[in-house]
Image (cartoon, rainbow, N blue to C red; front, side, top):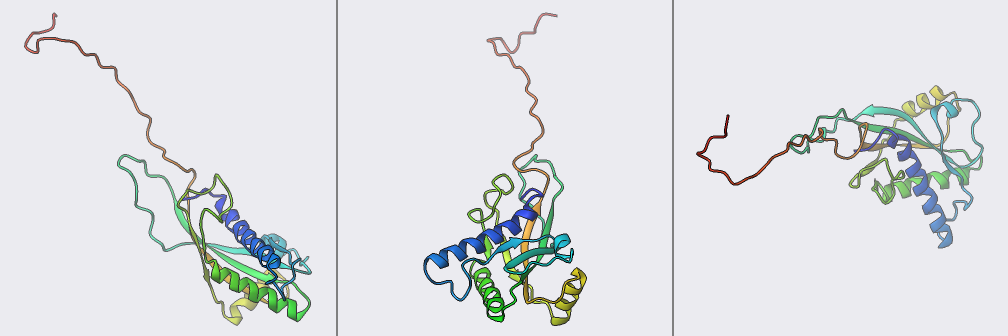
Length: 203
């Protein structure tokens, strides 16, 4: 279960993962032909649709949030109140903005390889210390849009078509708060004394 801010943090976690892998492979001399200065950032739909496109690097944009058909979490302790929660899936497009064919191809192919190799995000890779519960995981699943669907996606942003890949992050369970929220405990005062159970108390 996660707070509402988890939607943004999923994107930031993916960006941080790719940046970390970029730096690690560069230090090991295994990044080429991808540039060590490859910029990787999360871009909002509004920014993507503004008409001012980046000139280099990779951008990650969440273009749709949808309800998940994954069943709700039924694990509740006895007496625990029912709290509103939803399960969502995030649809992402990762686009390359390089003007050189070799850079464009290399960056997308490298990102596909990394996301396939690190397809499960857990608490070691999910950003946001007060957003997630300790056992939270998010799965990255390829969502291969058809050529027509990709053209429609880019047309909707007002941008010219770019080489890109799409994938889904699932399942993110959201609710307003984390931790246990039980009803307040009402204590009563009890007294103990040595008495004869057959003896009546004085009126």
